[in-house]
Amino acid sequence: MEAIIVTVEFVLTALPRFAAVLLLAAAGKWIVVKTLPFRAPEEMMLRNNAAAGIAVAGAMVGLAIALSGALFGAPWTHPVDDILHVLVYGVIAAELMRASLWVNDKAILYTFCITEEIVRDHNRGTGYVVAGSSVATGLRVRGVLSGYSESWVGGSGDMLIYFAVGQAILFGGALLYTSTHYYDVHKEIEVGNNEAAGMSFGGFLVALGFIAGGALTGATHHLGEEIAASGVLAGFGVGLLLAARVLVDKLLMPGSSLAKEVAEDQNPAAGALAAASFVLVALLLANATRSPQVAPVPVPAPAAETGGGQ
Image (cartoon, rainbow, N blue to C red; front, top):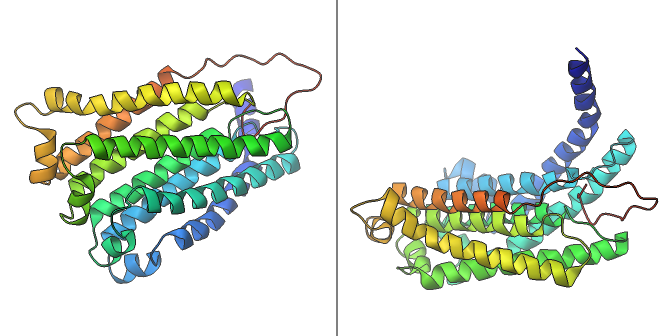
């Protein structure tokens, strides 16, 4: 009975933070939709544009993941303090999300115009890549908000640096994916309207988000050491992701080639399978390399948090 009472009290004390994040999500949705390079409501409701719907859905999921970073390390002392903590870091998360979405649109699918592909061609492959990029951004932002720094001023600078590190991991991984693939990824998505290729690439971006977010989670103010460690983990993770294609070819698709199924046959099942294999590898790696949670030792003056770390 006591456990039930404690659980109910725990849930009730969490409601103010949940309400604050819910309000931020509503505001963030408007911000993110305005950030997308097309008129989302018109495309989805009036033109039944599935590509736009896929892109917006990914953006909403990414926003929710990013905002969840605002809940890390909330004070848990007073409802007002809890709400202020959530609001401050929630606004930071939404702004980082918006900035990253704009940059990703210019840098990941850089060989063609995303707006034209989604609005004019209803290109679902492009929609999946935009969605994957959005979810990856949310995972990175959540990782950035979980770190520790010695002061609030230093923490703000640390967040920007770690955000840039996560962005570099995403760009570098995406470049390796497109440059080492068996087919021209951009051409397949743009010219071939290849939904399977978009699924595969979008899943790879989500996997990169897991890896970058995991590498940045709990980072401290020791920038040099943390960046070096994040780089090593990210490099190892990207290598495993690229090797995952071989796993799919040899074990999950016997008698066929994943590249052929995606590029020539435009098989959505193959694209979904490739995406799932990337996410599977990244999710397991992120959890396998996560530092064990150790109860902190009380000290007279605890370090300030850059974001949501406990």
